[in-house]
Length: 221
Image 1: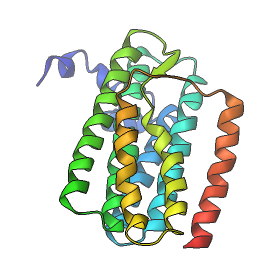
Image 2: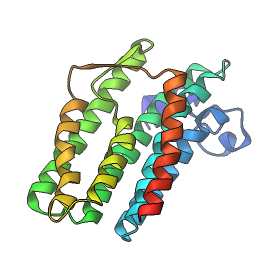
Image 3: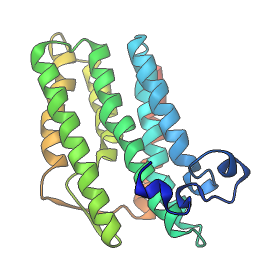
């Protein structure tokens, strides 16, 4: 047992009944994060079954959940420090599944399984995890006013556009474009470029575009 597990059982302190039975937090402040993870896992499974349009829809839904879960969490003013820290950590883990692993699964499902693509996946995953780890370090120190490096959540907007574009391309570009796009995206993950946080107006616009994107993808499938 680690020291953190011995610290008065604080990691399992939760007001909900479920929180008294198992470790973790299960209040409404993290509900959207859990929903996003569930859709990401469904998307990964669908990718391996060849249901790639459904996988892309799951990516968009996970992105919407990630975009709004922070706003929902901050609406709970009485959260404990443990709950706040847990929220930061679980959100990063959710981002790793939704926006790092799921895009790789979709690209593999398209047919990008050659050695070059596999090398790109390794770089993309590494860059994504470095980005998330770096964000966690900054978030634990103070409130983040801007993002250093491209937030991994943005792939939920970038890859659907690439997906729609690839449907109108001829072989081999219609498959290569997906894995090739991961290179500049990965570089932006670990870049020193600063990206501003989204305000509520931009979030509302992106939410609307997410619905439109889902409709277009399902229509073209």
